[in-house]
Image (cartoon, rainbow, N blue to C red; front, side):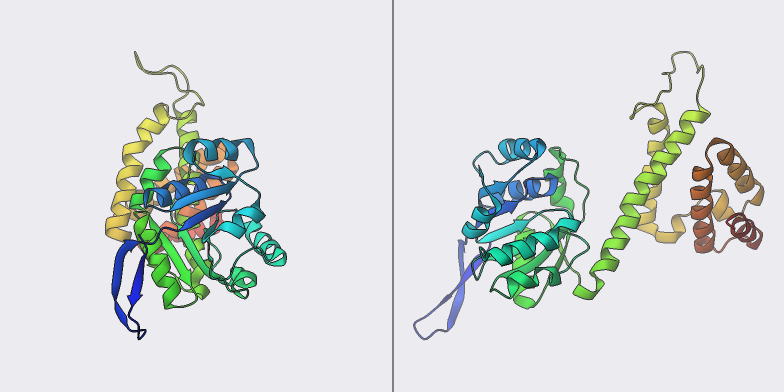
Length: 317
């Protein structure tokens, strides 16, 4: 938990008080991220007194995950918070901050934390100019709204951006309390940081969904005796077929980098890749275009057969 530093009558530091400083926490709003972080902060000993929740789903999450918290208007939450957590979508953050500043409801000294990945602390300027301490603390994790989100926080990194070392120290302490690993991200690199995470995580989902779609088409029709019917429901045979392969590929990529590249593109097999493009084109032109684009980037990373690079570059025009 956050600790306080004691001083003697002369104002000199005499050490860190081991007693935890419990913060009164308000959350806007009780979405997937806000409610999960609220649980983590409560487990660390802080008190989540109130949350803002409008949609039925948010109200349900607030009532089930944070049953001791009140559902209150945003202005009341801001007025009473020592730690104000703004867990709203990136596109809504700036407007929310401006509204809070105009209403003058955030007390000086309040720790204001937002969870938007693409923004640093600059977006909080209207509030920091009124005396708040602004922090950007982004959990580098995807949230589903289910209980596993809270457990996954213990293994997640959090990108922290602050205006000074005091802010970084507070952000680091909060993240450690929630069980995460704090990582410093400078204000000017925040967009690049977010782009990298989106490219790795969001596009991975797109690649998997496309691959599953192609597998469903490839495996349609009667199967072996006792083989489940291939349909369009998730977590079926195509997903089970793909899971060990992609799990191993992800693990290898994270541990070995570019050396983990395998397959026909990395080998420079022009005929195999050309056949793939033809098969995918007959199924879905957009899927074929995505395969071509990713194959070109893979071939560049692998520094593979120049003939394959030529094929992919020509096909892309």
